[in-house]
Amino acid sequence: MRLTLHTFLTLDGVLQAPGGPDEDRDGEFPYGGWSFPYGDQDFGVAMTGWFEHASAFLLGRKTYQIFAGHWPRVTDPADPIAGKLNALPKYVASSTLTSADWHNSSLLGGDVVAEVAKLKELPGDELQVHGSGALAHTLIDNDLVDEYRLLYFPVHLGTGKKLFRDGATAAALRLISASTTSTGVVIATYQPAGLVRTGSYALDQ
Image 1: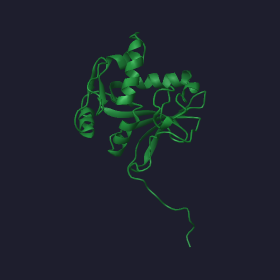
Image 2: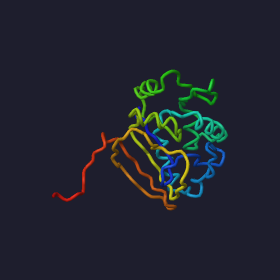
Image 3: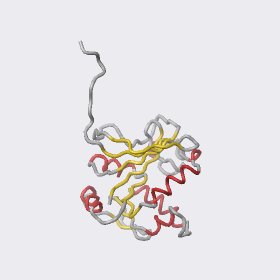
Image 4: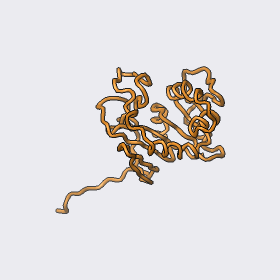
């Protein structure tokens, strides 16, 4: 399976608590729910299209608990997102959870990097990661992401957890596609493109 990473980001790179005030209050984060005003039909079409390709999900503890508290309550099997999340395998990367009770969920044990590498070898289309910031950092640093699907919302916050944090492994990306929703969300898809290349605009002396 290809590992695809789906992340809501502010223009200054913050991914913390996009969906609601209580998603993640770490650091007394005051802006939980910052993505909500920008939801529209274009946004929904993009998300639905991605979920059509899901064969399994890989989630961090916080995102898993948020999803497990919401999506099982959406019981329509024809719902394009709930239907997938409720039915397909869900792998949870956590060092603190002792059980994962949502249907078809299992905890990853031992070395997360090695376990994810094994999951990627399984047959299927996409192993999708949604949110899961701490897990995303590990995946990025260990070059496990095959495709980045980044949604940039027209807001900057000046505080909060970031996807590409200081000290992260440097790498280049290649833009595969980009579109913009009616509310100004830029949806950009990238694939890894090797090492960072540098140069200079200075005129030759």
